[in-house]
Amino acid sequence: MKTSISKIPGKHIAMTIIFLVSIVAFKGCKDDDEETVTSGPAANEVWMQNSKFSPASRTVSVNTTVKWINKDGFDHNVVSDSALFDSGIIAAGTSFSRTFSTAGTYPYTCTLHSNMTGVIIVQ
Ligand SMILES: [Cu+2]
Image (cartoon, rainbow, N blue to C red; front, side, top):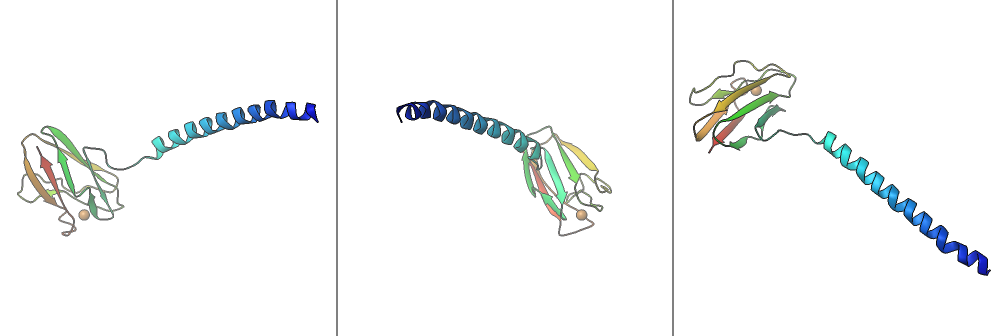
């Protein structure tokens, strides 16, 4: 009886260490997965997805190059409402970039889908 009781704490400690090590290992793997799975527009990107600009309003600093990426399986375009820029057709899986060197508010529309609008705010 006495010998079996004295063996239990050692076994328990060993099991606890294995348990903690496996938690740390699992957490490490999970963090790595989250990094690779993380997706969404970068700070200078606007995605065209499900016939919407995402985000519809993007604020950037002066001299930022904004990149519109067409994530849909069909054409879109990016046309400035005040005729400052016109991407032409942005085919599925391709992109259009423009550098904004002057502060201001730049609304734009996909003229292929007139309810698809967005704005770049440069400050
Ligand atoms: Cu469109």
